[in-house]
Image (tube, rainbow, N blue to C red; front, side):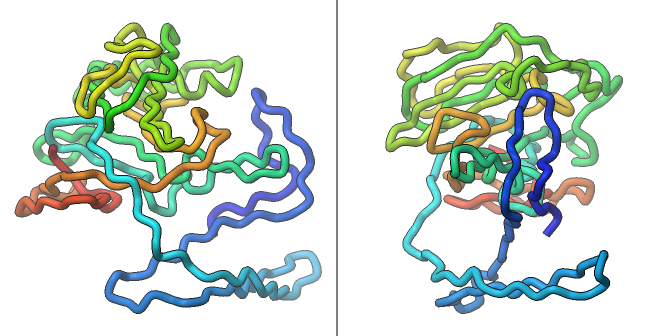
Length: 281
């Protein structure tokens, strides 16, 4: 449990926070596919009171898992070789990013990923000066529509960070996404592409696109540590004030592991790769 949300919430200049009255803990419970599916789950949390030097046990949180849901299957938003999709469906920060607004718990980034492209040795994602965007192998790669849909919004004209310098200052929370495009893919779902390069969009608001159509170039705008695509599927057209939806990629080929090297190619369908898998499309 790396994050426990409590009062006072972390201070962010672009957001005015109210007091909250409860603790919120997000827990991931991985269950191997070879194991029996649990019919009932409950929680017992044993916490240490460091002021009174005693342990406090909290029990409850009983629920019946849902097994009749299927993640959305989409095409990859990038093409080519030696990609890694990180922070997706792992114990990483995307899963724990939450907003408590109007009595609702919102987690737009919950199933989001960031991607990088590696060299042939699968050891690094840039060559040269890390403060220069062009040093990164993925910079200005083409981004594609993951499904048929309509372009709901394009936000453009925002500057980029210089490589890994994170030198931008934001005036609003919306600027965290940098230059972005929102694709309405129907059924109340939206595909969000963040950190795009400025003035490099191939679509405009209202355009109808087909799966696989080019829509923008990958960049380094917004709250970005280096050139990459931040991608998520949500139930509202908002980066943060929405609920992230799980998804899988229709087809990809695993060709190795980051910092380990190449392996025999294995193609997967309707799946999502492991944290450090190197994949091709």
